[in-house]
Picture 1 (cartoon, rainbow, N blue to C red):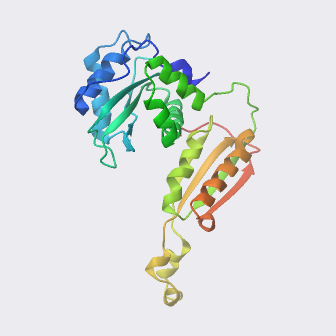
Picture 2: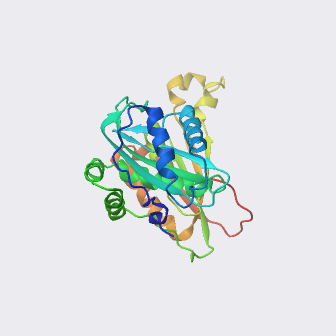
Picture 3: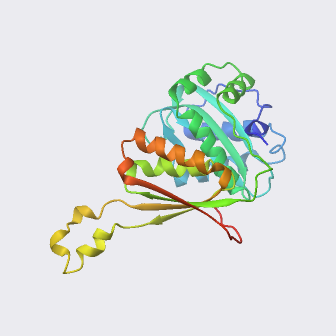
Length: 270
């Protein structure tokens, strides 16, 4: 199964004249209904679901990009679509810049893990300025998705061995945390937990015997990612974490350990 299977190629509109966030969400609702998956749904219902998601927090993540998305209980497949605004729209993006490129996702509520991975795959491509420039230059919906497919494809394998390992990542650098967590969201059938932790210094500071050696600054940032990953992805995951740490110059504040799972039972959500 490939991400391309969800592209809404039935949509005829690529460039939008919407002048506000509400107008844009309404146009997404209208164009999304051109897909086979959503044609039976009411446009107003789709608009309200998209608006509800935006009230939680803007899906405009900066650099003129937004990924509006919502979940529905009565669909079985995803719909991924696109709209481009030449002038840009005030979308309450986190950096305050007007948004020009909108890729939307309408997702089944029961497929949360796939939803997260599709979001991650799309955002990974849209975070590269040269890719965005190439996508904005496209003249039609079909040309846009052809270019997007050339830039990167997310594909799931149905024939993975049932062999799993646990990866534990200790992170003491706040800047590195989001990027490392995103690495795990891209892995097929990966189960992830995040533990809010503290360095031992926080507790030693409160003990009279050690208090003279400690100070408040030594408490620091500390989170632990616990992930169960198919063993075939272990080496690639470690490499990605190492590369990100090196790029952020925080290698001394990220530690990765792994161990094979000889026994496991059940599953958890991401």
